[in-house]
Length: 222
Length: 193
Figure 1 (tube, rainbow over the protein chains, first blue to last red):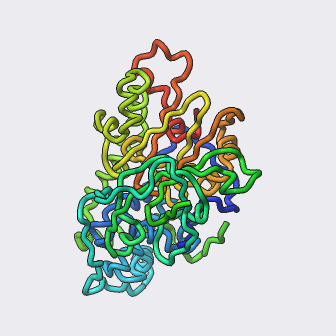
Figure 2: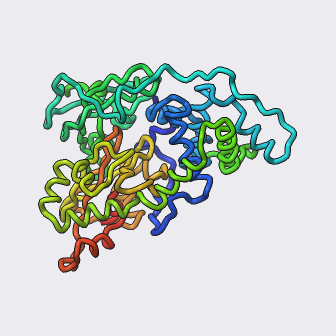
Figure 3: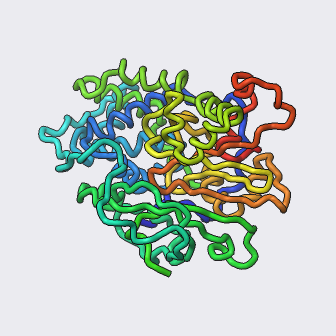
């Protein structure tokens, strides 16, 4: 999905921020509350999973993704997962804020029946065992598929259609593309693939290599 | 940047409201939330990674294990947990500099570095470090000479990366414990050297 979250290589963000020493973990108390509540929401409360959370983040509009910062987007994604799973009603959060401020506002009741997905992980975490041997070996040249799926994917946009070399065979893992949508874990081999900057950005690019981790189904032999 | 809708409610107020809605129904326990917050404010942070690096600087056998099987070697020091299922350690040398990002979200090796700092989550870093890393690093205060090879790592799966920085000159006599004070979070992500 070419969402706002797929930021690699995009323009218009200005200069990078110089690090500051002793930056607090949470700049304001609400950020810590949003962080903790989102962790609890992800699996336990909404019945969803980490990839569904990433998909929820990528489903936010530009304003909801950017304007409240990192933990603001966590909060917005948590609210989206909770409404998608019918744990809370749409608009319930804003109505509660207005009620807390003394406004006379009708607060939508919690849905009578939740709509948690039919989902249960086969094991903890995301690493899995795949019986068949990896399709590619270290040193193989591979091309990232030039596709733009409509659902969740971690095939980063700026690598699509580009060719690189496998440098590490990583542990196999469940496939975010289907896991995010509760369509099965579909564990696959994962490869670290190294690209030359000029193959990504043209002959005038700064010289460097870029390595990303790519799932087997994202790749074809070059 | 985008314009902010004046009708939008602040995230602080919305966080408070959501916590009320979930707590009233027994879906979250604020004490559990407090524990999560306190863990990442006080216990899990870059000091963990600094201990790993200092040990690697002083113990060649540990360093070999760390580079071969990062996750297991890190676990020897007691560090494991969410966002640390499989950690690969990247060794900086005089001629190679590694720098880590996550362009898709802000994935980060929590067990060794804690939660990511503001600059790591900044769209400017996520978007540009994979396109013009030397320029971005210079903006952040690290100017690399042309003869240093730059390797950028985009954490696009569940693999997490930790940079093993160069041991600073003049620390030959320092103990492992003293060395931890020389290791910064920024060095372990690769925006300092």
